[in-house]
Image (cartoon, rainbow, N blue to C red; front, side, top):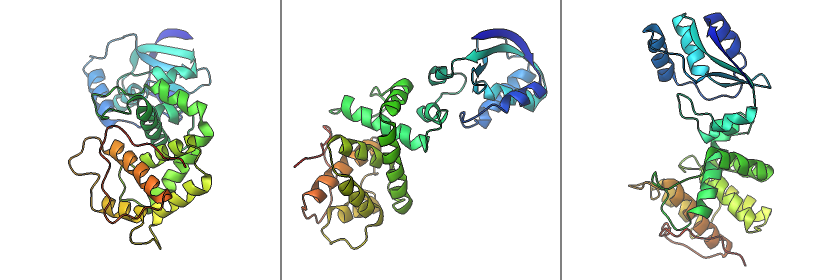
Length: 271
């Protein structure tokens, strides 16, 4: 890695931003904040600045570059070049970097869904007997990235099935729980045909018996049963999907679906 102090002009900023591939979504408020500081001469030189990877991709600094362009004022800053692209996973400058940003830089399809699903999967195993809220320690960005790399094909499959289901069943909030459920089902050696049929029925709800658990679950979702007054909606959605699948696979009739009492989380039953 090479570092130097440089003065970034608006023209140079525009050239650097051409290398801004799959970075974070732009926060307009942050650009305005930086622009105001530059105009007030209150943006001092610090250890933070612009980082460009050895692959030529901008890793950090897009918001200050946009602020330079907006103000038209050159800014003295630290420029780091030839950086290891993997450091993107630990950068956190100015605006909090999300797990989905970490996956997006790796060209992961539907990175937001993948990151949310992996987070729930890890929480399921590490906080099985806890309520998942802001006080529960969750996985780091590196944990999520490393897990994605360890099961890339399975996660991409789960996310694809999740997105297909969500397109038809838009009423289901926290739909990334579907992808987490699929990963758990794969762990339990559930057949692909069962997973495919279950998610298809979940998506469409067509031609199902009145007491089919999938239909009763869909009715509960339409009635807002999983949403009202709950701080752990994603966790409850995942738990309800597991309960529904167990009932469905065992052909147990249901007249009124009630979400399971958690914690602990339910498990996928095997025959």
